[in-house]
Image (cartoon, rainbow, N blue to C red; front, top):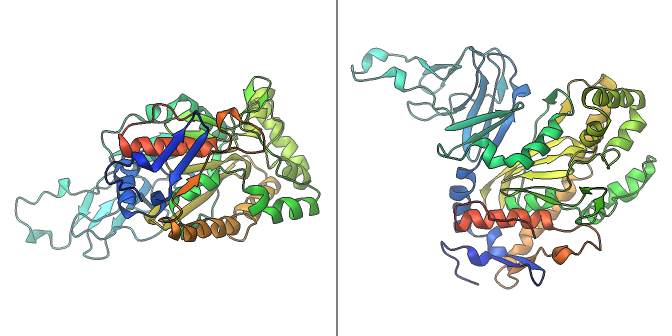
Length: 437
């Protein structure tokens, strides 16, 4: 096996002329590579942390782990949204141990009773008279995340105080795709946060979340059995890498800086993945929702919003799946284990019947007992077990669709986009010059 050390350039074979793209499997098993990922990717990225609908009123909060750090997302008593590091300035214990809450006035560390208000200011210390005159209470508030940005209710944070501005990191193309998702209505994260884990490397879930190739096989029960059984036809329909519909490119499209979508929103696409189900199980309510979109955006933009952008990645680890209303993040705790957070994002304008239908569609495929999630866990954990042979079988092939080949169903450009940015960040600390083929 090659000795990569600090120079990880040898992990990728990217032969655009021949149409070959391969990833060395040590990328999925090597502890030193994971250490570099934490330093050069997660610590240098804008990371999705939550949505304002999870803590809408002053005193509302949630706690969450982002890139290994415990944080508190809170709407403070002054109405400001804050991301605070969840660690007491005294001895380091978690200040807030609840997953979420409402109406909080203070956070009290259970270890020694230090008290902080919702702005993070230190307000109470038992036996404070024991400290010297040099003790400065005002300097010992809860530390905020170095950077935070609110984009249409989506809260992103970064642990790099010198990171490039949010708009630059995302780029116009990626922000446009996210905005198309948020145009579905006054969006909220539905109560019922989905949290699970997987014995697999985190990058496998990046690949899987945008992989159309596996769907007909891994999810055969859903597409070949369940969908026809409820009168929704069979699928999935093969999608070529760069099919043109009018002036729209339908296949995978790089969005810059490692962000990528399975397909750009387009008015040429009539309906989204969920459309047949919603038309069948909430027909009147869905028709009214479509009118709501047309009234608010016009017919062409309304079709773009409904059709969505398929499955897309905001580098490094935010997956948004328009067709199933999914927001998903995942972080490695080791090379072969990750912790995953999933949320259902839906319009507040939904009637009860339409919300019920959306949730049934979401849970039936994405839920813990759904058709997709258990299958995907099984598939990715099987890959990780197979990587025990990485010394003998060194490379994974991700070449589908190179050299302009749009035959034979879904390609893998979206994965190559991720890997090119990943490789550039590890080797140069910069964005990739190009992530397209």
